[in-house]
Image (cartoon, rainbow, N blue to C red):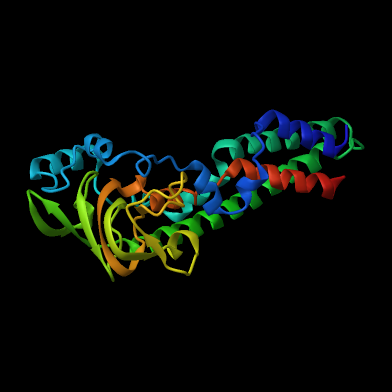
Length: 292
């Protein structure tokens, strides 16, 4: 059996197959997000929306109701990654999960070669090269994964800078300025030019309101927002404005429909996670051609 055949068998036995993705899903992160995001608040009637979130368009939430939602759903903020020493992060990538299985396979190959050489010095070196190849795969994969996770961490830090600090909200019939982290679903918020959208909201009324969605889509042109549903896709319709997008013109009144990690921005932050299985497969396939 050739080294390539051994690697193929090792790959099949250790790393499970993953379903193929549609080519269109790999066009861009934003295109992937369009397919994955599940929001229907832009399509349902206002009465149904009010009932769903126990909202009051005129008076806003009571203090008690807002506290209840805050305790249930948590603060309106992106969950920061857990602080872990860098060497532990790298060690987990190097020895954890499927990498650990590949280390076991590499050790078994080297042990088998050692046993064969002990009984027959002229034995082929297939097991030796296979063990070395597996070690190379694990190390390179861990380095790439660590690099990707470091980039994801920097992206999360940049997201924190985009999060608004304050929001104007209706509570107990009064307009109040509160910490954006205290917003809950069903809150009635007021946004004007120069503000950052404090959560994912459905626009209830607007006056020449436009937002800069470049932080989400990369589009440089301001996009108008109005109470009308103009598209089935929530990321295309005009009656939704998203967490951290910048108001560049006009003003609007909206109802909060998503907060914190459940916002579209929160979903984008989550997309930064590394798929270690895919990296392992990529390097093994690369070695197939090198060693063939």
